[in-house]
Image (tube, rainbow, N blue to C red; front, top):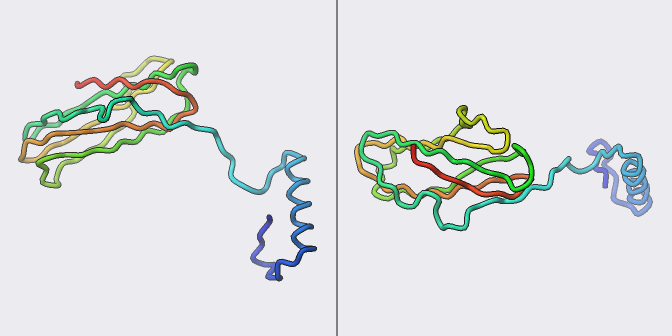
Length: 144
């Protein structure tokens, strides 16, 4: 239903029917004014519990990983990348970040560089990568 703050009237049945008629006419004209534009995406994860499973990162080391997503059918599809991590023996000063991998020249895959910058303790890194994408596919994680 259309909702207008400048029309503070009770939701009476006649007004609701009028609003519904306006919405249906807009949908038929392909001039949709209600609801967000959307793209159907799928959550893509690997079958393993962790994509990085307890790698030991020494003190004062910056460790990088290349995460490559190879789609099943599309070439270089739209995708949003995220991750979930667990760090054991941490002090809370470890820094995790990622960015699109500029060395990936493939037109069929997407890749990111995932980095942990460690402080004064040896830590064990566990990471699970999650992709929301318009296609299915597989992940490959390589320690750089």
